[in-house]
Image (cartoon, rainbow, N blue to C red; front, top):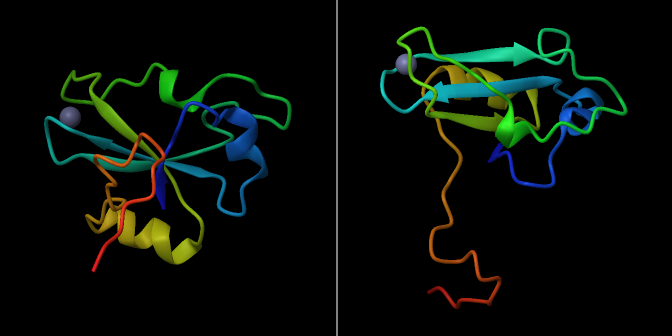
Length: 98
Ligand SMILES: [Zn+2]
């Protein structure tokens, strides 16, 4: 699983093996899976996923949008797992780890 990035669109979701967008709220513990059908995403959809207007039931618009690679990941996501963050590596430089 990974956070939806700027290159990910409705088409990414519609073509995915697991056509569900994981959405988790950063203000309350609410998290759901939204299907491509619910989001009206289709094969040629150019809407960027990270900009989809999503509103949590608590009223917050501050939500994470997560793409899932396997059905297992969708279960893990609902159980509370989040994608591993790679903070500080967004500059694309290789960083050694040991
Ligand atoms: Zn919420």
